[in-house]
Amino acid sequence: MLLGIIDGILTGGVYALMASGLTLIFGVMEVISVAQGIFVILGAYLSYSLEAHFGIDLFLGLFITIPALFIVGIAVEWAFLRRLKAQERIAMSILVTYAVFLIIEGVLNIVYGTNYFALHAWYVTQSVELFGVYLSYIYIFGFLLAAGLLAALYVVLYRTRFGASVRAAMQDRTAASLVGVDVRRVSTITFGIGTAVTAAGGMIYGATNSFNANSAEDLISRLLVIVVLGGLGSIGGALAAAVLMLVIEDVVAVVWSPDWATVIFFLALVAVLSIRPVGLFGRQAARAQ
Amino acid sequence: MVRRIGIGVWSVIFVLLALVPVIEGNPTFTSIGVFTLIFMSSASAWNGFSGYSGYISLGNGVFYGTGAYALTVIALDAHMAPSGDIFWLVPLAGLIAAIIAVPFGFIALRVRRHTFVVITIAIFFVFQLLAYNFSFTGGSAGLLPPTPNWVGNTYNDPFYYVAFAVLVFTVLLFWGIRRSRFGLHLLAIRDDEDRARGLGVKVLRIKMLGFVLSAFVTGMGGAIFAFFIGQVYPQYAFDPVFGITVALMTFFGGIGTISGPLLGALLLEPIEQYLTIQYSVGSLYLIIYGALFLLVILFMPRGLVPTIGDWRRFVRVHLAQRREKVLPAKGDAVVGDDVAGDVPAVTTGMQ
Image (cartoon, each protein chain N blue to C red):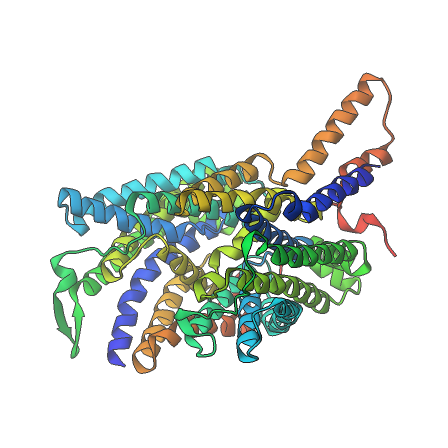
């Protein structure tokens, strides 16, 4: 039980990081990036390659993989999302990013095959005792890293000029551009940032799970559940929902069975949305069309 | 006029489809044909709800999987002989999928747009996990439906004709809906749900009916699929890619039209099957599929059928201008309205 709670909080932090990227992108651009799941896996594979071929430590490798995924994100935004029309924007964005998802999945399958991979390092294999339960170091390091990056994201959003333009664009794109915010540029960079966080998320995911390109399907469905539950566009909501859902899932996994834990995970979303269609912390009325 | 040409073209295509096993008896070919027909009806069913009402569902895999398991479980529990009689279970499996759609719709149809998309994905995964966890579904080991002992090159033919019959039923069903009051209600919901409700459309009831009919057809497709391949596993029967595949096919052909999903599935499914057979690993297929789809979205976001309609209209107007004749505005509007017509709902005709 205690193990479930601690485990849930620690992994919840990592999911919070990945989900915050997704919800940030939605908030600014009104785009749902289904490709977020495959970007996480891409980040995990990149970390693997750097470690296996160049012996670069997983955490040091982030200095390469984070900028790399930032560039991938910018390229995707520039090549495809920028060209979407305002009409049916959300539905189209789901389909476009799904196509990107399929392409990257196909490439990863060809490059790495479909066998399961896992990331290796001393902190993955060694454990430490915490409140009477044993945990691998990676859970703690990963949680600290995720917390650090989320804090950095907070500083960027609330303490810089760029952050002010992002928040302005989240509130109202038209009004923001009227007061001189370059909304297109802000959108591109936001998509880059939202994608870049998956590099860190992917590294931790790859170190705590075995993965192949197919894992992205499971991952994106969880991330979507988290951001919708938290209220799309609300970063605080995504954080709370991520930790809440992962704690629930891990507790159920420990006290009942891991198979049913995932069912509970999705049923929780269905239950919450039937009562509160905008999610826990959503502010926009979901009924407006 | 144009509408009549469209119906003519499709009649020829359907006659050809009906004759496929006679013309080309090669089992590989007819096997691709069975999958293509199943996807033509599944894509039409997706379009019949999501395309008409604007509620983009990515959870239609629920009905496909339910249909697949329903046929298998009933056939096994009733100890049915492995013969063509099992085909009678196909409509029953569709019915079970339709019943499943009622609680599903009751939860999902209360929310709109992207929340609806996400909730359909979530419910889909619940069903996939249930198939893994229940005992009557055989868990991850799956189930083996009875396999008929037909031999030779004609093994696929009964499956082909049943799938063809389901397709004809589907096309007539959604063609009828498109021309009915019910179809207009669905389109009104797509255009402006609040206003439609204000004008007296019983929105929840209409959406639910559309959803259930879509589930019925998709469930029949899943049932034929299970009987045809002779095995059901959670990850193939409840395939996460299914929901997006039917959506892609519809968008490719033209969402909201009758011919769009038919054309999309007719063009894309054989490519998929061919690439899977040719390269055994589906990876290359994923890349080609993704790239093709990006091209369509970026260059003809409305899909093939409406875009072709636009081109025809463009050419016509130019020819007319060259002849220095001014086209009457009415004729102009009809040209854009191809076989099925991507018609802005309410203008089509009030009853």
